[in-house]
Image (cartoon, rainbow, N blue to C red; front, side, top):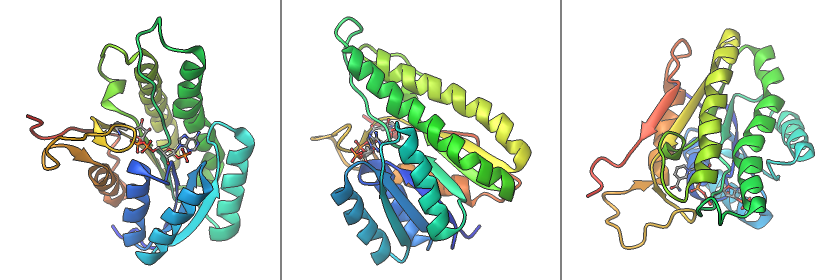
Length: 235
Ligand SMILES: NC(=O)c1ccc[n+]([C@@H]2O[C@H](COP(=O)([O-])OP(=O)(O)OC[C@H]3O[C@@H](n4cnc5c(N)ncnc54)[C@H](OP(=O)(O)O)[C@@H]3O)[C@@H](O)[C@H]2O)c1
């Protein structure tokens, strides 16, 4: 299915997985709203989107701040007139045993990885419901399905996100809105550097972007609600 002309908001679009998704959307000639906190990085990514044939709108936001998200949606509608796709990708992780994990890091992870997704989703839903179409894709993690030492805070946010996404999926499909969750394993980004590993064996941001495109390209009657993305043979 052609994605040309569709309007997408991508959070965390200034680097890593979010930027790869934004650039892949640009190649599809989509209109891409890039959201993250650091203006200079966002503007750089927006220039790259334009160079690839997309249309870009960089909007500096902190996804955990409700007033920022209201602005994000209103500016998207003012500039592009509709919202077809929301990619909830912005996220962060701090890894430490429970008794060493700082309370403010625990709170920050929940406010970005979960509260931010809730706020962005709640803000776009009325428009998608009204137009009776749309796609919301949440970038979760295999950490939202597995257990590992030092991951209590981060994994808890992603387990929460997976539960949130499945409930939302059941609600939104009644309005022809498709909701999906992508759960990648470890991906080579600043968040998770893979220095020294064989680049042919590990997951890259583009792999996640390709999974997102696969979900979006399905005909509108079909919903791929969950994707687990792993390296084929990490050894
Ligand atoms: N890398 C991995 O191994 C891996 C594996 C599975 C899942 N994931 C998930 O994939 C997503 C992207 O990860 P990544 O590896 O691409 O991370 P990254 O390279 O660190 O990029 C994170 C992006 O999120 C933005 N961001 C962070 N906090 C934000 C906030 N409060 N408001 C708005 N934007 C914010 C950052 O920009 P600013 O700092 O400028 O705001 C940046 O654009 C995350 O949800 C992560 O949990 C990553």
